[in-house]
Image (cartoon, rainbow, N blue to C red; front, side, top):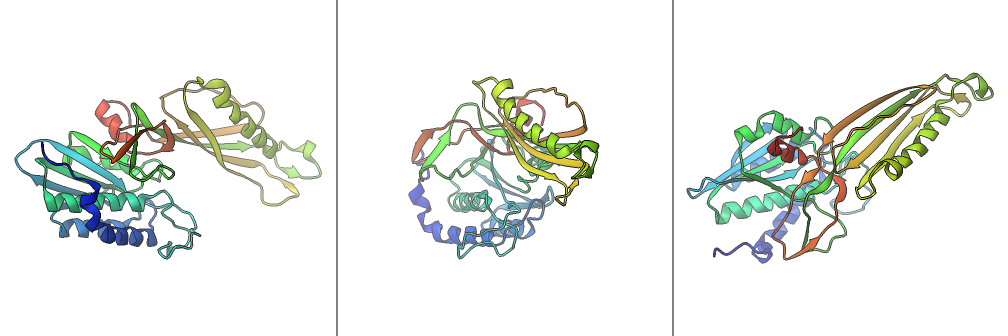
Amino acid sequence: MPRLTEIADLADDAPALREIRHDIHRHPELSYEETRTSALVADLLEQWGWQVTRGIAGTGVIGTLKAGTGTKRIGLRADMDALPILEQSGKPYASASPGKMHACGHDGHTTMLLGAARHLARMKRFDGTVHLYFQPAEEHGKPSGAELMIMEGLFERFPCDAVFGVHNHPGAQPGTFLFRKGPFMAACDQVSIEITGVGGHAARPHMSVDPVVVTASVVMALQTIVARNIDPAQAAVVTVGSMHAGTVNNVIPNRATLELSVRSFNQWRGRGRLHGPQSALRFQRPQSADRRGVLGAARRALSGAIKNAHDVGHARFLYAGGET
């Protein structure tokens, strides 16, 4: 039986990979703006002997390496974009771009895949073809980087028999991989709600239709969706992450907005009504529930479903013949 790679085999690469990760962390780039990161990735892959294709979905990078005569093909995937967050960690490698931060670990994901690329190119201990998918814009929403890469013919141009990915999970013990049967990370739906009332003076609320009061009621009512509409055996989350209305304290505004994040593991259809003021609702599903298992750790642990979302689930829907 062929000897499998062990963590100890990569020990000599750790200092260089740590520097790469710190460099990417120090220079975060938002969705579809990953020009520096993608150039770094592409240059390193070329140095290590990979065939490189640039510009997939704008800033995406594909690396291809063949060994032996085998016909099997696998894909390994990582995301590269950062988040619009001000970093205050105080780390020596903290973000040098105010308002941008690798707060979801994509600097680590990119570095991990680069580490795999370096080792695979050096050892070539496989028989077939490996494609590396360095994806932009996982955080973007619709269209996400995975969706756009697939729309641009990713799997027609770089076909594979299976795709493997990994996501960091703070709190898990080092050396442990988490896996489970079925969906592993949630689908993430983005919901925008706009409530239009009738503005007025704060001293004359009876002459207005106050969208702030309505919005407050909507926020509280939303908390009953999971409790009273979802099967208790299923997992779901409805989170109101943003609420805006008005600009001063003595004027009742005529408009209020809510931005929601809805996490789920099953496809579903909903129906609802709001009475009184006018409302508009926009519902988007940029990320599909991710069915994947990750194996090959020093130790393994059975994990529950994780409500963090990831757009790599689009690949699962493509292969299953379902909707993206």
